[in-house]
Image (cartoon, one colour):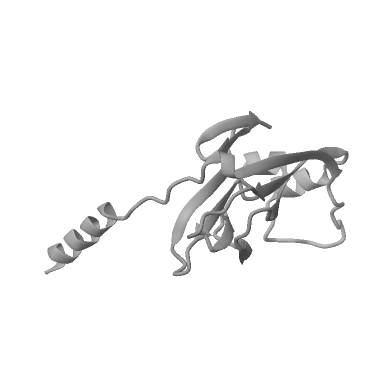
Amino acid sequence: MITKIIFYLLAGSFFQKQVPYKPSEEFELKIDYIFKERPPIDRQRVEYEQATDEKVRKAISGPMPYLLIELKILAVTDDEVRIRVVNGNGNLVFNRKATSGTVIKLDWGYTEDIKEKITTNEFTVYFNDEKRKSVSKIYLTILEDGIFMVNDEKRGKF
């Protein structure tokens, strides 16, 4: 009995269809790479949940590279009704009706934190139909060595 259940679960996973990537002609990326000061830490407050190396990193003064990305949707197909953006932690960042010309602002954070995976290093933009099933997606990620990937294509390095 248990082997039948395992077989059906494995067989079901093989038949699941992968969501295709949205063509690069249908969206545009604008990268805003600025230098920004980290907010100062409060030395009077003790935080037991925070690691020592994270406290030291936040104590470093001076401007640090900070990444903001603006994603503009140029074209939407008839079956793409909603746009949902989910970060690497699974949190919903953006959820709106899909229209061409929609601008999505993604605040990535400090590039050193992204490379070390302290903050999220990926965002996935899903285009859903009326039944909330994903029709297409845009996958944005930054690898440990700073390579910026869009839909598994190299687009630059930070």
